[in-house]
Length: 370
Image 1 (tube, rainbow, N blue to C red):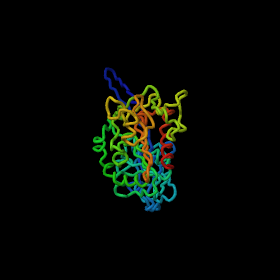
Image 2: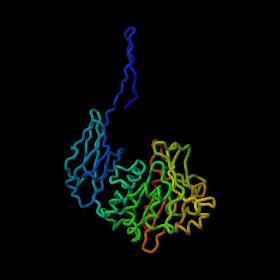
Image 3: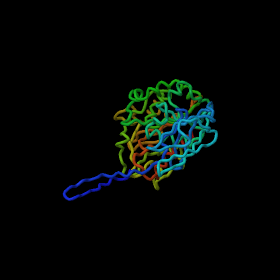
Image 4: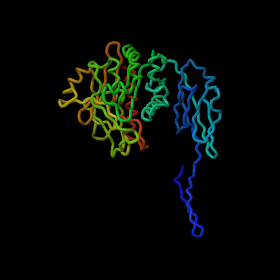
């Protein structure tokens, strides 16, 4: 809608103001779901929609449920069985506006990578999580979304899955192991299945508050979780005046940090957002020091947790770490830095923010080839 205009009408000593709102016709697909369950990844810029479904479904007869912008209509019709064995075009119209979307449905039997989270449906993810999930589905071949309930119930075949990723955001933060368990009971309930996957060589990428999860699957020697966590609400996210960063001294050669956009003269700093980016600073880190937290120094933290530190905050806290593969167990990468952020309420030009996707791609490459 364009900015409202006020039209003043005068007739002698009689005055009347009219507020005029001009609406722009909009023709958009706002959501797309197959058989009421499998959510499409919408690329609005290219007008494409990708949907990933189990290979047990018949692609020749699938029912789309299509969300549309106000007053828009779509053809082929919503809710009608459609042959998706080849890409299908859907035309959306609304008075003077029209758009054509191409929908491709891909059947996946045994995924190579899974984005897991609490909701049953990908469309129920919050904006931070959904942005990360969409990136994975578009960039990691043979990947799909699954809920923790799916994992617990064995709905998803993990026999060929190399990496499970959980990026967990919660407005206001998740401070401490008990708070985590209260906020994510579905994850805790799936811990047995995830532990089996891990013990049989499966690897994980845990980011943001999901970094509490290694303790739930028996990966942390002292069964502890990050001891210093906080975060803001997405709607009230802080607007940064300049790029934010964390530090990787001693670990610049680690695969996680290769081919990133670096700032000249700062080989130990990884910048991940740009000026005016709105960031919640959602952090799950390990405080190191004699003042509080239980870990007087890094050596004590390494010994007690069994983890290896990879990156640090400005105060020396551990903000990225890993649990190396041992025996039959897989590998776990954790990124808890508040700088690791996928979604900004305000759309700003990306430069250093491209490092988020690059670093995540590095993580997948590293975990899939351990």
